[in-house]
Length: 158
Ligand code: HEC
Ligand code: HEC
Ligand code: HEC
Image (cartoon, rainbow, N blue to C red; front, top):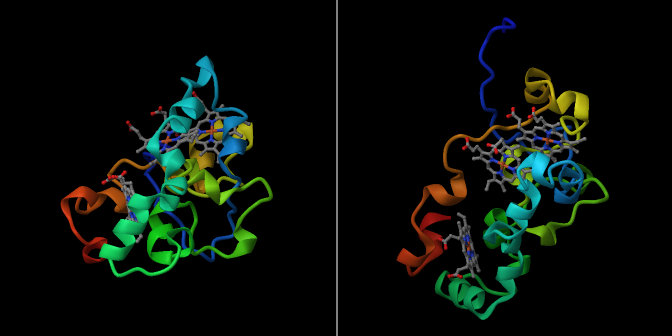
C-alpha cells in the first residue's frame, strides 16, 4: 500500500492473533476527560458496560429459557459471545488488567489493543491500523440481526 492509500477499517482478528486485549481501564487511562470527549464515561454509562451484568438478571434467565439455553447465562458461550469482549480467544490473549465483567468493552469493537495503545502509535493513524486498531463503520454482528425484543428465541439469530 502506498503512503497515500486511504486507511481502511480492519475486521476483528481471529482468535490466534498475537495481539492482546488490555481491557477498558487501560484505554481509559487516556480516553477520559474533555480532551477525549469523555469517551470513557460515555461508555461507562452505556448498556455496553452492563452487558455481562445483565446476564445475571431474571430477564436473562427468561431469554435463556425461551432459547433453550440451560444453566447460568454468565457461563454460556451462546450468551457470552455477544455480551463480553474477546470471547473464544485463548487465555493468553488477555493482559492482566482485563476483566470480562466489564462487558462489551472498547476492544470488542476496536480490536485487541496491546500494540496500538502506545501514544506514538495512537497518534499515527497508519501505524495504529497496522497494529490492528479496528475502525468500525458498519453495525456490528451483534446488532446486525433481529432486535432481541422482537423475537421469542434468540437461537434463531445466534
Ligand atoms: C497512551 C494513551 C492512549 C491509550 C492507552 C489508548 N489510546 Fe486511543 N488514542 C490516543 C490518542 C492520543 C489518539 C489520537 C487522538 C487524535 O489524533 O485526535 C487516540 C486515538 C484513538 C482512536 C481513533 C483512531 C482513528 O484513527 O480515528 C481510537 C478508535 C482509539 N484511540 C481507541 C483506543 C482503544 C480501544 C484503546 C484501548 C485498547 C486505546 N485507544 C488506548 C491515546 C491512547
Ligand atoms: C447475537 C448477539 C447476542 C447474543 C448471542 C445474545 N445477546 Fe443478549 N443482547 C444482545 C444485544 C445487542 C442486546 C441489546 C439490544 C437489544 O435489546 O436488542 C442484548 C440484550 C440482552 C438483555 C437485556 C434485555 C432487556 O430487555 O433488558 C438480556 C437480559 C440478554 N440480552 C440476555 C441474553 C442471554 C441470556 C443470551 C444467551 C442465551 C443472549 N442475550 C445472547 C445481543 C446478543
Ligand atoms: C459497540 C462498539 C464500540 C464500543 C464498545 C466502543 N466503540 Fe469507539 N467507535 C465505534 C464506532 C462504530 C466508531 C465510529 C463512529 C463514527 O464513525 O461515527 C467509533 C469511534 C471511536 C473513536 C473515533 C473518534 C470518534 O469519537 O468518532 C474513538 C477515539 C473511539 N471510538 C474510542 C473508543 C473507546 C476509548 C471506547 C471504550 C471506552 C470505545 N470506543 C468503545 C464503536 C465502538
